[in-house]
Every structure is written in C-alpha cells, then in structure tokens.
Image: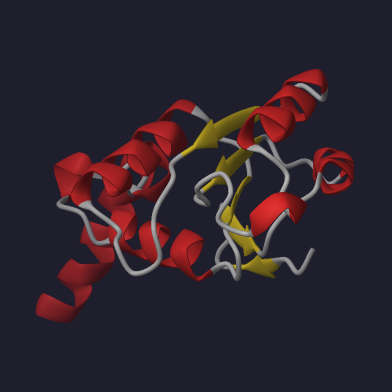
Amino acid sequence: MDIKTIDQRYSISDQLTEADLDTLAAQGITLVVNFRPDGEGGESQPTNAALATKAAALGMAYAHIPVLPNQIQPAHVQQLQALLSAHPGPALGFCRTGNRANQAYQMALQAPAGAKPACCSQPAAQEGLINKVKSWFND
C-alpha cells in the first residue's frame, strides 16, 4: 500500500488488501472508496465484496465506484461528491495506481459550487472574514 496525501481530507493509494484496511482504520480513515472494477487485476486482486465486508467489520464506510482506466464519467464524480458529503471524516480512494482515485477527486473539486461536497465548500463562518480581507485590497 502506497498512500499519497492529496489534502487534509483525501488520500489515494494503489490496490488495497484486507490487511491494509486494518492499518487504515488504525490511522483514522473513515471512508474507503474502491475505483477498481472487480477482476481488473486478475485473481490476485481482492474482490469488492471481501473488502467491503472487512471495512464494515472495522466500522469504516466503504463504497465501490468501478471506473475503467481513462473513463471517469460525471456520474462517478457525483457519486464521490455524495459520499464525501455523507462521510465528513478522512477518506481514501484507491485503484491500481491511485490515478483514477485522484482524478475523480480533482474533478469533484472542480464541480460547480452548488454541487461541491461539504468538505470542499468554504465554511460559512469564514466567508465574512475572507470578504473583509478582500475589501481591504479593494479600498
């Protein structure tokens, strides 16, 4: 497992095993998103069902958004946005190399403001401060 932190909210990894989920749970990851279709890596790839069962036993949320390489669709991005909104804790997305997991997240961040998950939106309490700072430069 090769984890790369994208931001304080989201990390990516290559293919996970059931044992890797133990490590992630100990690190405080609360949501795992599998972007890899079952069987893509042959018989050595753990099945989605096996990973989902292990994650549930560890008290982690788990989702499967199967994406073929270089074929991320708007529906995949919307699914990720919904998951991140529903699960505010640290999340990790994975696929064969981590690229699809990262690309889907970057696309979710680029979505229109109204469609962004809560984790990516600016906290309301800070909006006033940012507008105040902006006004200093405009005056």
